[in-house]
Length: 243
Ligand code: 13P
Image 1 (cartoon, protein in one colour):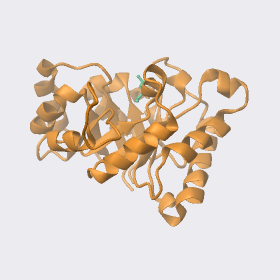
Image 2 (cartoon, helix red, strand yellow):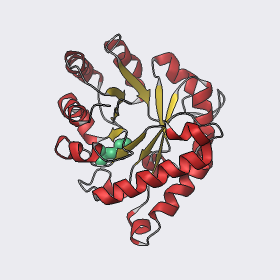
Image 3 (tube, helix red, strand yellow):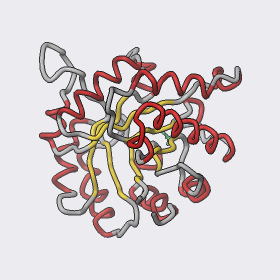
Image 4 (tube, helix red, strand yellow):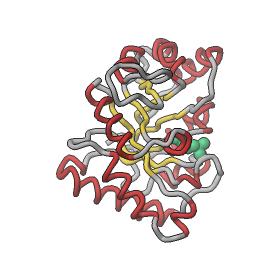
C-alpha cells in the first residue's frame, strides 16, 4: 500500500499562504498519498486550490454529534461539505488542552465515519509514562477505548514527548510500538485490522524521514511543523519507500 504523508498545520497558516503551497503540491508528483489538515477556516479554500491534484484535505477535529448547541464546535458533515475527506481525532494537544478522553474520541470517530470521513486517531504516551515503562500499556488502552466497533480509518502513533521537540524514539522503540499497535488492531478488528495504516508522528523532518518511514508497520507520517513548508512535506514524501 502507498504510504500516507499527512500534514497537520495545527493553528498555523493564513489565507495568503494557500496559493503558493497548493502550487508547490500541484507541481510535484509524489509516490505517496498526500493529505493536508489546515485550520477549519482554510479547508474550503485549500480544497478548492488543490481540486483535481489528488491531494486530500482534512480537519483537525470534529464534534461527536451531527449538529446541535455546541458553540465553537464543528460537525463532521460540515467538514465534508467544506471539502475534507479525513479528520484527525484525539491528537494529544486536544486530549491535553480540551480534556478529551478516549471515549470522547470514539464518539467523534463514529460521527466522522457516519459523515463519510476517514478518521486518523492519534495515540501516544507522555515522557513520564515511557520512563515508567508504561508506554505500550498506555497506547493499548487508548486504542481499546478510542476506536469504535468496526473502526475503519488510520492510526497515528505520536509519542507526546517527540511532538515539536526535535526528539524521536529509537528505531527499535518505533518498531516495537507499531508492532504492538498492529497486534491490538487485529485483536479488536480481526482481518480488517491487518490493512489499516499506522502513521508515525513526532518531529518527522526531511532528514529523518527515510529511516522512520522504512520501519516495519510504519505506513506513513503525521507531520506537524515540517508540513508548513510544502517543500519539506514533499521531501518527506520523497523519502518514503514505494509501496
Ligand atoms: P511535529 O512534527 O511538529 O513534531 O508535530 C507532530 C504532530 O503533532 C503532528 O500531529
